[in-house]
Length: 202
Image (cartoon, rainbow, N blue to C red; front, side, top):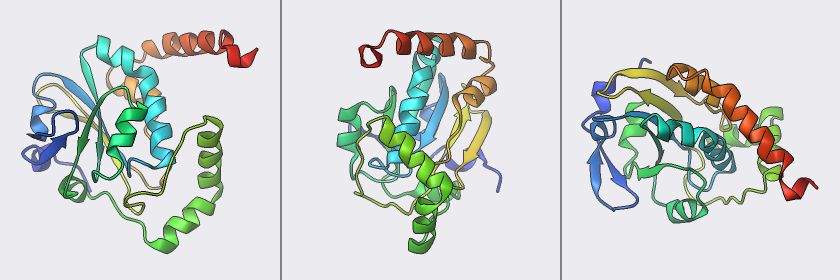
């Protein structure tokens, strides 16, 4: 199902910092946006994705592009914000109306268990565990998310829907869509340099 940006532009989400409701179209009124729709705030896969996207946050901010994380409920959002998993703004789709309109699917109890035990699910779990990220089972763990990249003014540049709980939109693809592919090598070089100088590697 194709995403129609006008179908969600007038829908409200809650700003975690201010507690105020805002309409979605205000997010991209003056700036382009990368919007992550996270499964739930305590999800290990989601926290890993948020950390990975935060690696390009500086580049996005320098290019006047907003990095935004939206969750389907308020359960766990305070811990997520305090943990600084995403170097960006946080919002809540309180009644999951936006998630529903975007047709983000839901697991059932059997399918989520099968995914967790799958090769892909176990690989993602080990990656998150190796990153020493904390996580919990609070909230709706059956929800699936995705991402939107929206240009300043409201033109949808790219939409992404998860098919598996650990699926994510790679940083390389985000930068490519935003015509910032030339930044990829520079970011990789900076990450390599920080790893080499990290005391934990000595």
